[in-house]
Amino acid sequence: MLTWLLRLLAVGFVMTCAANVAQAALGHPSPWQIGLQDSATPVMDGLISFHNFVMGIIAAIVIFVLALLVIVMVRFNARSNPVPSRTTHNTAIEVAWTLIPVIILITIAVPSFKLLFLQQHIPPADLTVKVTGKQWFWTYSYPDNGKFEFDSLMLRDADRKPDQPRLLAVDNAMVVPVNKVIRVQTTAADVIHSFAVPSFGIKIDAIPGRLNETWFRATKEGVYYGQCSELCGKDHAFMPIEVRVVSEQAFAAWVE
Image (cartoon, rainbow, N blue to C red; front, side):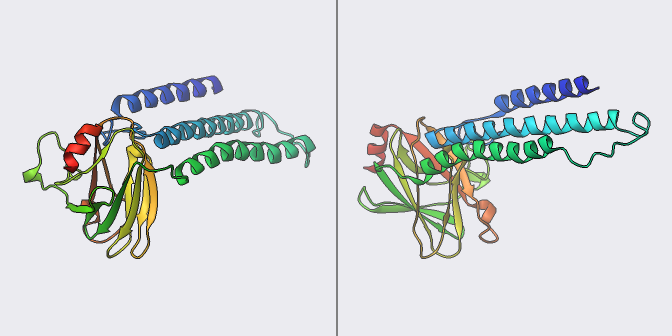
């Protein structure tokens, strides 16, 4: 019975991974997608690796606990074990169930702190973009390029092209060059918003009267989508983010 359960779990895990790979897309979610979006930055690479690492630990713990439950049900039920044991203590087991969780937590903590440092330590920026959250759209400013700014609003269905995703496409996208460190400064004009782009591995609150910072370095050209991730009012669900990663030449031309 135990072998059959382990085989069933293994088959389910393989099918899940296969579905995840098949459904993952670069820059936006896909129908029936299970896992994370494909990575486009070093930070997201680290997040995906850490996620898979922790999922492996979780799967091992689940299988171990399931095996223990099956063993207990088979070997220690009233029919198989009519005279119950009077044992109350087992020093080796008590030491093990204290030390093993501590070791597991330390094993998780070390890569977690490394990833947290990578996210929080902003390297020297090649470009700064200031993002202001408003009800219910975004305003992008480029202080390094003449201090111009523009608003970005969600496209209505009548204005969308067939290849533009519903509820995610906007009229004016944020444009950045590929393979450059982009410092993103966030604030808000009214209530708290949250600037999040899953493929970049960034999510930071935009708070009125406060300037928060994060960064990313997109390694692949393309169009990447996100959304406001903080409940900010009645049109919170219609406040998408679109980031276009282009070549340096294309970015220079866009700025001009």
